[in-house]
Image (cartoon, rainbow, N blue to C red; front, top):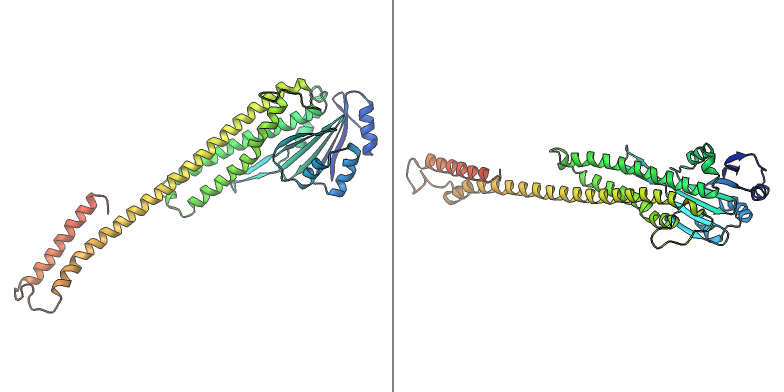
Length: 332
């Protein structure tokens, strides 16, 4: 469904025709104007008219309808197709949710398609409409602002994940939390959320590098103003910080999981030592009682009247000696 549609001329929004074809024609007829139409999870039937009016490539249209795409940048004859993945983090459930945001840029038009939650489009449009100077740069300003808002939110999510991971780390290494049965499951779940976050941030590096015109991507990108390259470089720098944070989080949560498993292994070894120690202590009186049984008078040898208290004293003495030895070695 269409959620917003507007014509922007010299950085200011103007009221245009309701018909898409007429609105696009008006935007192209007037200099420094473009049409921006926003859609949310459109059906194939709803998108057919947009495809026909703007001449969008069928492969890009298929990606926009099906979603589940990696961040990327594709250039076609009549348009530029960009995919970004905004993310939302819910600290209460320790879950990272990713949406999808597709942008079609062409001659005097921008078509944005949103899937899922977490899209910054509403805030970006509002901020752009309040900044006519930036909006005068046309469709490029929309692509830059959306990318900038998306990456800036990545930084916020990375900071929230770092805070929650520090809390989880403190719980894991606390005397009580380290022995919880659900600790390993919580750590693994947290690692899965970082992986979901990584799927949104890492693939975006190449498209932004291409827009910034750095490294091997020195050729101008069609439908993007070359003067915007420094701004895309700034967004790329922010994304590099995000990726470094994601790598750090991933390594840290792996280290926490390894430390927790080692901690559990040590605890199990301690338990086995304690069990072995108590078994050894129980074996001493069992052995003595097994040798002599209870079938003789005044045991041992065989009619000594003080044999019973002597054997009891010997068992107690051996138990005390074993207990002290095991205690000294830390087995008990």
